[in-house]
Length: 259
Image (cartoon, rainbow, N blue to C red; front, side):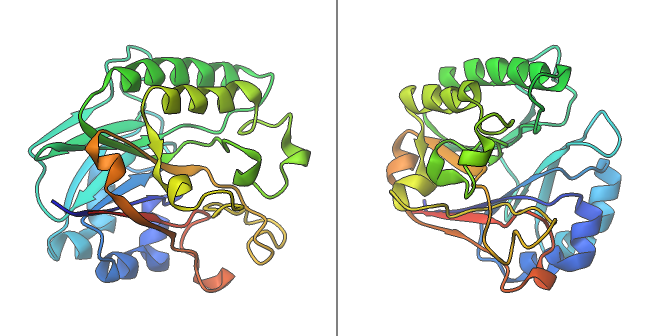
């Protein structure tokens, strides 16, 4: 079965819905949309996306335990066969950072990895999260795609100003090595596979300065697939807004066609 899967960090679903997310949902051909940083309860998310849900979208969400932070969701054209929140972690089970759903033989996950800050407890927490998530993901089998905001630029091709970020969270050697381990375990970075040896395509741009206008971005929103699904990825695009004032998030949707 063919799928079109999108992933996007909405930077607050209530704000995004008011700035253009609803229009995007009405126009997209995606079958499944993985959403990160809803920053809302289930009730608030359903209220913000009510027009889309009325048009037939089905919503599953992992609510954030901390108000105004995290929260992930999956929107789909049909109800999933099963939905699971978290990956069995005692520390992060209620953090609203991981959600997966089964659609026939395919499992789709929405993941959010927080940004971290080098030399702080927040970075230590990020490493603990990555260790537990990595162990879970490497044990998975079958047709599986985990999509989301990883807050890690894997290689020098994945951020414009890599020389200035060698010691910055999101481009640290330990973080990049973690991506290496997932790829060695059988995952495929399908966007990079379809766009080899080119800068980007970037999916996040700071709201500060002229980062968006100058395309000074980071590629931190990934779809990592394994099983037969990885070989079925035939087209990948970053749906970058035509202009700064048309953005409804500081991230752009990353959309992959699996045939």
